[in-house]
Picture (tube, rainbow, N blue to C red):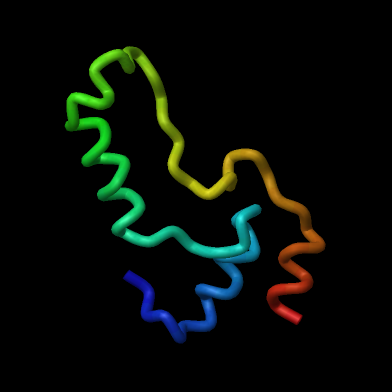
Amino acid sequence: MVPPDHPERKISAAYCPLGWIGKPEEVAALAHFLASPDSAYLTGQVITLDGGMTAGFTGRAIELAVG
């Protein structure tokens, strides 16, 4: 895991439409849901947990992040 103060985090966050990098707890919450009875009716799905990164990003966001 990249340390919180590492300069690369700012660049990585700029690639993410939400503007921040997800936390391990968020991935764990999805895994917990999928393993629980609450997801019993969910079948054949691809769940993308990426803060919208697959939706795309703009070059302007990168420019703003790196200055």
